[in-house]
Length: 370
Image (cartoon, rainbow, N blue to C red):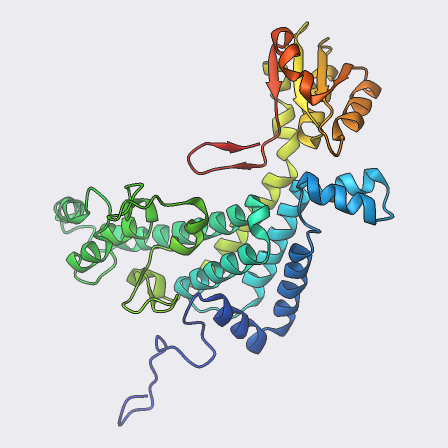
């Protein structure tokens, strides 16, 4: 509150505002201001720590030996799409029901949640971290789109727009680093330079730092958000471009629509993949696959439904032998199926036309973890 007036600066953080992305601070903020959402987060993390949301073969085997669920129920409970959907639902509840004031606070909330879920066991399921990153990208896009509309709508008749854009483009560094300098060159205002700065790929375009240490995938949640940390580090003091601190009432709705789009993508996931089956599997081919995967199983059944006659060779997938149940399911669908020992894979490769493996995760560089 300023002296001699009754006005208050709404941009100044209050005691109830989230000011850092530290997981401990995010948990304390949720516990104090949003106990219901904090309980949801705790419950989700407990399942992660106990391995109940892991789709790895080891976790499936452990649950199979200790649970009274049928094999079919266990199999569908470990569907990675359901695990990803649970993550999206959790984030939708946390984002939609918490009282963050601007994009900067939302980014800090997402960064803190990403680190918290990762340490609680999310590192076993890359899809969990990818969901957090996709929502963070949606936040940046919403802010940049709104700011671009404001910049495009102002001074439209000045005739100097192109000249100003050229100057801003020249201020953006061509190779890594320099994000803070670019923002300073823009005079502290939101600009094209700060829009680019908000995207981490324009901050660090090189794959190595000055010390030669290669950036690893697990660091990306910590590094995302388009901000830099002030001297002293410690996960606090994040700074974002000025547009991230502006109050935008429509931001929440835009983010919720983006989350709903992710949910729709998950619901149509197998349908979109299965539509391509006829383009990849042809009559008379021998297909090799490993163990059991719902995605691969539905993909092969979709090809068989197109009246394609082909043979599938399934590696049994020791020590959990998911290939046996995979072969049984395919045979029941009328597909000629053979189960082989894992050690016989080399011998059978000369007869194989295609190898189809499920993807555990898709990385940012296009690589796969099978």
